[in-house]
Image (tube, rainbow, N blue to C red):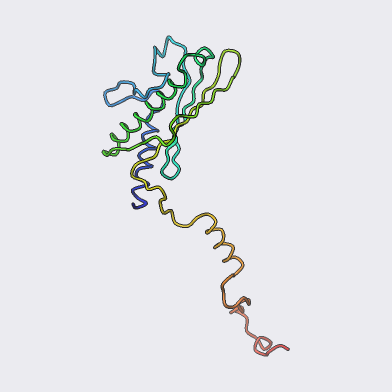
Length: 188
Protein backbone atom coordinates (compact mmCIF):
# COMPACT_ATOMS: atom_id res chain seq x y z
CA UNK A 1 0.00 0.00 0.00
CA UNK A 2 1.34 3.39 -0.87
CA UNK A 3 1.79 6.20 1.61
CA UNK A 4 -0.74 8.34 -0.26
CA UNK A 5 -3.52 5.79 0.41
CA UNK A 6 -2.67 5.74 4.11
CA UNK A 7 -2.72 9.53 4.21
CA UNK A 8 -6.08 9.58 2.41
CA UNK A 9 -7.58 7.18 4.97
CA UNK A 10 -6.24 9.18 7.93
CA UNK A 11 -7.41 12.48 6.41
CA UNK A 12 -10.88 11.01 5.87
CA UNK A 13 -11.08 9.86 9.49
CA UNK A 14 -9.91 13.28 10.70
CA UNK A 15 -12.52 15.07 8.57
CA UNK A 16 -15.28 12.71 9.74
CA UNK A 17 -14.36 13.43 13.37
CA UNK A 18 -14.17 17.17 12.69
CA UNK A 19 -17.71 17.16 11.28
CA UNK A 20 -19.06 16.01 14.68
CA UNK A 21 -18.81 19.39 16.40
CA UNK A 22 -21.56 20.50 18.77
CA UNK A 23 -24.37 22.02 16.75
CA UNK A 24 -23.46 20.35 13.44
CA UNK A 25 -26.27 19.94 10.92
CA UNK A 26 -26.73 17.34 8.19
CA UNK A 27 -27.64 18.03 4.54
CA UNK A 28 -31.33 18.43 5.43
CA UNK A 29 -30.68 20.97 8.18
CA UNK A 30 -31.33 18.53 11.02
CA UNK A 31 -28.91 18.11 13.95
CA UNK A 32 -26.44 15.26 13.47
CA UNK A 33 -27.09 12.13 15.53
CA UNK A 34 -23.75 10.86 16.79
CA UNK A 35 -24.87 8.98 19.89
CA UNK A 36 -23.75 11.46 22.56
CA UNK A 37 -25.71 12.58 25.63
CA UNK A 38 -25.77 16.21 24.51
CA UNK A 39 -28.16 15.28 21.70
CA UNK A 40 -30.90 14.13 24.10
CA UNK A 41 -33.59 16.48 25.33
CA UNK A 42 -34.24 20.13 24.56
CA UNK A 43 -31.02 22.19 24.39
CA UNK A 44 -32.79 25.33 25.60
CA UNK A 45 -34.84 23.94 28.50
CA UNK A 46 -32.70 21.05 29.77
CA UNK A 47 -29.43 21.22 31.64
CA UNK A 48 -26.60 21.24 29.11
CA UNK A 49 -24.60 18.02 29.11
CA UNK A 50 -20.90 18.33 28.49
CA UNK A 51 -19.61 15.38 26.48
CA UNK A 52 -17.59 14.81 23.37
CA UNK A 53 -15.01 12.63 21.71
CA UNK A 54 -11.74 12.75 19.83
CA UNK A 55 -9.78 10.31 17.73
CA UNK A 56 -6.13 9.38 17.55
CA UNK A 57 -4.42 7.31 14.84
CA UNK A 58 -1.21 5.44 15.56
CA UNK A 59 -0.09 3.15 12.75
CA UNK A 60 -3.13 1.06 11.90
CA UNK A 61 -4.83 1.59 15.30
CA UNK A 62 -7.62 4.13 15.79
CA UNK A 63 -8.32 5.17 19.39
CA UNK A 64 -11.65 6.81 20.19
CA UNK A 65 -11.58 8.79 23.44
CA UNK A 66 -14.91 9.80 24.99
CA UNK A 67 -15.25 12.37 27.80
CA UNK A 68 -18.37 13.26 29.73
CA UNK A 69 -19.49 15.02 32.87
CA UNK A 70 -21.79 12.67 34.77
CA UNK A 71 -23.54 12.48 38.11
CA UNK A 72 -22.71 9.85 40.70
CA UNK A 73 -26.23 8.46 40.31
CA UNK A 74 -25.37 7.55 36.69
CA UNK A 75 -22.16 5.85 37.79
CA UNK A 76 -24.00 3.52 40.16
CA UNK A 77 -26.60 2.48 37.59
CA UNK A 78 -26.83 -1.20 36.75
CA UNK A 79 -25.06 -1.22 33.39
CA UNK A 80 -22.99 1.96 33.33
CA UNK A 81 -20.01 0.36 31.56
CA UNK A 82 -22.31 -1.20 28.96
CA UNK A 83 -23.88 2.18 28.28
CA UNK A 84 -20.44 3.76 27.77
CA UNK A 85 -19.41 0.87 25.50
CA UNK A 86 -22.57 1.42 23.44
CA UNK A 87 -21.82 5.13 23.18
CA UNK A 88 -18.33 4.33 21.85
CA UNK A 89 -19.88 1.96 19.30
CA UNK A 90 -22.30 4.70 18.22
CA UNK A 91 -19.35 7.06 17.70
CA UNK A 92 -17.53 4.42 15.61
CA UNK A 93 -20.69 3.90 13.56
CA UNK A 94 -21.00 7.65 12.99
CA UNK A 95 -17.35 7.83 11.87
CA UNK A 96 -17.97 5.04 9.34
CA UNK A 97 -21.09 6.73 7.93
CA UNK A 98 -19.43 10.14 7.76
CA UNK A 99 -16.29 8.66 6.15
CA UNK A 100 -18.45 7.00 3.49
CA UNK A 101 -20.22 10.31 2.83
CA UNK A 102 -16.91 12.20 2.52
CA UNK A 103 -14.66 9.72 0.67
CA UNK A 104 -17.32 7.68 -1.21
CA UNK A 105 -15.69 4.48 0.07
CA UNK A 106 -16.15 2.39 3.19
CA UNK A 107 -14.09 2.40 6.36
CA UNK A 108 -13.45 -0.89 8.14
CA UNK A 109 -13.02 -0.72 11.91
CA UNK A 110 -12.63 -3.88 13.98
CA UNK A 111 -12.21 -3.85 17.75
CA UNK A 112 -8.62 -4.23 18.84
CA UNK A 113 -9.42 -4.57 22.55
CA UNK A 114 -12.45 -6.54 23.70
CA UNK A 115 -13.68 -4.01 26.28
CA UNK A 116 -13.26 -0.25 26.52
CA UNK A 117 -11.19 1.37 29.25
CA UNK A 118 -13.54 3.40 31.46
CA UNK A 119 -12.20 5.78 34.11
CA UNK A 120 -14.44 7.75 36.47
CA UNK A 121 -12.95 10.61 38.50
CA UNK A 122 -14.79 12.48 41.20
CA UNK A 123 -14.99 16.26 40.82
CA UNK A 124 -17.13 16.93 43.88
CA UNK A 125 -19.99 15.25 45.76
CA UNK A 126 -22.42 15.65 42.87
CA UNK A 127 -20.41 15.49 39.67
CA UNK A 128 -17.79 13.25 38.19
CA UNK A 129 -15.86 13.00 34.96
CA UNK A 130 -15.91 9.89 32.81
CA UNK A 131 -13.07 9.18 30.37
CA UNK A 132 -13.42 6.11 28.16
CA UNK A 133 -11.37 4.82 25.26
CA UNK A 134 -11.71 2.01 22.75
CA UNK A 135 -9.14 0.94 20.16
CA UNK A 136 -10.00 -0.27 16.66
CA UNK A 137 -7.89 -1.73 13.89
CA UNK A 138 -8.27 0.25 10.65
CA UNK A 139 -8.84 -1.85 7.55
CA UNK A 140 -6.74 -0.90 4.54
CA UNK A 141 -3.62 0.02 6.51
CA UNK A 142 -1.01 -2.74 6.90
CA UNK A 143 0.22 -3.79 10.34
CA UNK A 144 3.71 -2.40 9.81
CA UNK A 145 3.55 0.33 7.20
CA UNK A 146 6.87 1.38 5.71
CA UNK A 147 7.34 4.88 7.02
CA UNK A 148 10.93 5.38 5.87
CA UNK A 149 13.64 5.80 8.43
CA UNK A 150 13.09 5.72 12.16
CA UNK A 151 13.91 8.53 14.56
CA UNK A 152 17.02 6.71 15.77
CA UNK A 153 18.31 6.25 12.23
CA UNK A 154 17.78 9.93 11.41
CA UNK A 155 19.51 10.96 14.65
CA UNK A 156 22.47 8.65 14.00
CA UNK A 157 22.83 9.95 10.44
CA UNK A 158 22.72 13.59 11.54
CA UNK A 159 25.36 13.00 14.24
CA UNK A 160 27.58 11.15 11.76
CA UNK A 161 27.28 14.01 9.27
CA UNK A 162 28.04 16.56 11.98
CA UNK A 163 31.26 14.92 13.12
CA UNK A 164 32.29 13.92 9.60
CA UNK A 165 32.15 10.18 10.18
CA UNK A 166 32.86 8.18 7.04
CA UNK A 167 34.71 10.93 5.19
CA UNK A 168 38.11 10.11 3.77
CA UNK A 169 39.80 13.33 4.77
CA UNK A 170 39.10 15.03 8.12
CA UNK A 171 41.38 17.97 7.46
CA UNK A 172 39.98 21.44 6.96
CA UNK A 173 39.53 22.76 3.46
CA UNK A 174 42.04 25.42 2.45
CA UNK A 175 40.52 28.84 1.78
CA UNK A 176 40.25 29.73 -1.89
CA UNK A 177 40.45 33.51 -1.59
CA UNK A 178 43.90 33.65 0.08
CA UNK A 179 46.98 33.65 -2.07
CA UNK A 180 50.42 34.62 -0.97
CA UNK A 181 53.98 33.61 -0.66
CA UNK A 182 53.62 31.86 2.66
CA UNK A 183 50.67 29.74 1.41
CA UNK A 184 52.81 28.31 -1.39
CA UNK A 185 55.79 27.34 0.75
CA UNK A 186 55.65 24.18 2.78
CA UNK A 187 55.81 24.59 6.51
CA UNK A 188 58.18 22.67 8.68
